[in-house]
Amino acid sequence: MSGELRLRRRVAFSETDVAGIVHFSNYFRYFEDAEHALWREAGLSIHPVESAVGWPRVSASCEYRRPLRFEQEFDVSVSIAEITTRTVRYTGTITSNGDLVATAAWKIACVDKQPDGSLRSTEIPATVRERLEPYVHRPSAVGHRPSDTA
Amino acid sequence: MSGELRLRRRVAFSETDVAGIVHFSNYFRYFEDAEHALWREAGLSIHPVESAVGWPRVSASCEYRRPLRFEQEFDVSVSIAEITTRTVRYTGTITSNGDLVATAAWKIACVDKQPDGSLRSTEIPATVRERLEPYVHRPSAVGHRPSDTA
Amino acid sequence: MSGELRLRRRVAFSETDVAGIVHFSNYFRYFEDAEHALWREAGLSIHPVESAVGWPRVSASCEYRRPLRFEQEFDVSVSIAEITTRTVRYTGTITSNGDLVATAAWKIACVDKQPDGSLRSTEIPATVRERLEPYVHRPSAVGHRPSDTA
Amino acid sequence: MSGELRLRRRVAFSETDVAGIVHFSNYFRYFEDAEHALWREAGLSIHPVESAVGWPRVSASCEYRRPLRFEQEFDVSVSIAEITTRTVRYTGTITSNGDLVATAAWKIACVDKQPDGSLRSTEIPATVRERLEPYVHRPSAVGHRPSDTA
Image 1 (tube, rainbow over the protein chains, first blue to last red):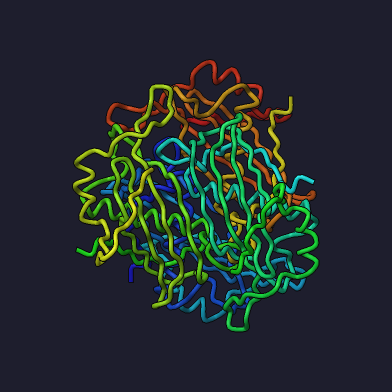
Image 2: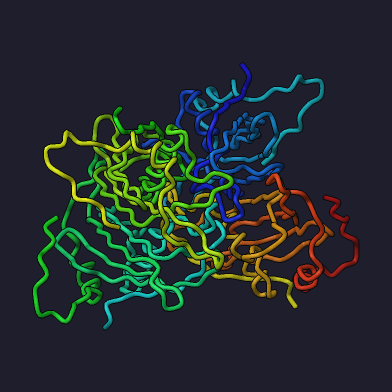
């Protein structure tokens, strides 16, 4: 298993801005959509109708290499870099016609909702962990990756 | 009382599109923001943390007269055209520097959420009706306006 | 030819709102994306890199029948109701699992950009008209549809 | 001079998602709006009608500490961390009622548009640099900050 989910998309008009290119904030939506497709492929939903837990973003970053323009086709690929007991860390890439467009990294945390509405970090349910595990990217593994302690 | 809520805004970069003007879908967000400001001025929230009812759109329409551009200042004004037992109908106008930019009309319905998640039309709570009444636009009123039966 | 373009989509997380359903403004983006897919199927782009003309919205309206929720699949279909010398009028429908979700109507105008940046109505280029003509919905035509005089 | 631009905002309904909080991608729009307000306060526009240069994002990152909810008021503050010959690097903070909500860092590059439409890095015009300089955040400066070589 490649540990990767790949989606092909095309730039929508409403995603562009007056500079003639996709607004930078929309790249984060592209990556999120691919992340959620990964969950579906794993037999999960990140937001089922009834769920005791939620998955807010802890951090998100993107490096922009090339612009995307209206109607341009591109590929978004996402894999899981690491699962800790309470967080999932992803990396993603956007390419178009063989060119690197953007790279991104982000982390989500498993939380439960307190009676006062606040969100509290909690452990990832075992069933979720099991289904996401096959998507963890394992590099050819000579060295060790430092553990995420968040 | 004027029965009108007026907001001044400035076009954000992310609201524009590759044609160099505000994307037409964002006008609906401008009008909605003014609608919600009207509720706040009336001492209400359209989506309080705990609420038995919700207010989905039944219909929305907009006529576009002039484009809006990045950083352009404009005014959004909203008033209530009619309140029926179960719906609120609004009209709104966007102007910029004295020029008419757009006009809009939309209707929201009061609903409660069924156990299966579906939405069912219900009567507007009396407290909401009382607070919105002062914002109903009453034209100088020779003739009668036909009642909205939706 | 059916005179219709149909797209299947799935609701993205970023398209939902705190009411738990797709924000009403996003329906306009769904319809616009299907409209632009219709242009592509017709061998056109509504916004080519070099173009003497643009196509702003003149009006847009939508009637909402049922909510759409996160990850729900739905179909958007668009056809052209009428082409005049300067405008194109569309109608569209969203359905999901056989249920009607929304209907919409909108009109775009062909404009050219004046040296001062303002937009002026102009005639639709012949090549565009020819390619869009097959998508004009011709109902089985006992009565006549009144002409759009915009 | 504080080297900081501060804006107060309120969460709009369309900025929330089905999790009941502001969608994480919208934080980037909040920071960008404050950045552009900084340019206006400096007597500039980041996208004037006629301009030889543009300012795409090179990178953007955000750390999320607390959620924002519908109608919540919050403050966005932005300052310039560094100006190099070709880039501007910003840092920003969102707070609400005294609590830290998010921190962000991002970098924009000055580019000119090539005849083929591609974007090429170029030097920041002197007039822009002069006007932005007062907004560069100068910490109390015992050590040296490493130069950005992008």
